Length: 228
Image 1 (cartoon, rainbow, N blue to C red):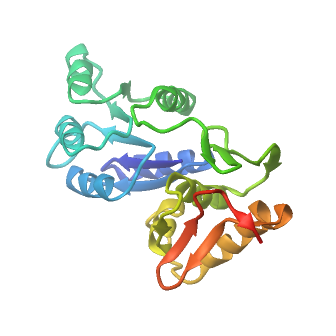
Image 2 (image 1 turned 90 degrees about the vertical axis):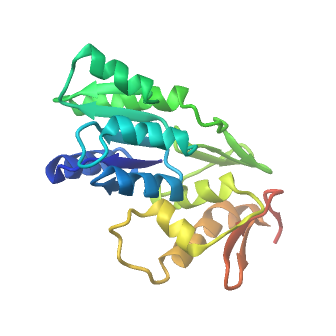
């Protein structure tokens, strides 16, 4: 799961990023609305946490522009203002929920779980490619009826491949999906995790499903794998 945190207060952004990371999210942080718009258009997020009080365009305007540009990720607005008219303005701008500050992290997590259950993105609850299945919400993977235990990073890489079966996904796209933008190691980390994935989802079952496309990236076969 990937979250975009739009928050100009460094301390609050850091707390949110650390807390969500502990819950299994990959997080990116945008300190202003313009950068948030650019990031949300360039990457697929499962949820956007959007502060109302931002430099330049406020959270209401940013949310309207996100929706106007086709970004449909669930948006949770965060603000110190709790007036009824502010809550209404946020929802009218296209937000899915509204959480006033200060709030407990337990409440934030509950709101995020509720947004994921009713999220507007048209994504299947269970991803299926051949006999390979994934439940993104419960972080479970199966080959046929056999459960497969994956690390958080391996799961994130497999998820983006399963959402784009038959397509070549570049190493850069895989890196951007599974690591936040502060990650500096651009070496062979993706290749290492792909090898680990093959050992978990292919080798024990005698199949070959993840293909290397030279100088381009990796592709998950649309049929879920062939004997190999």
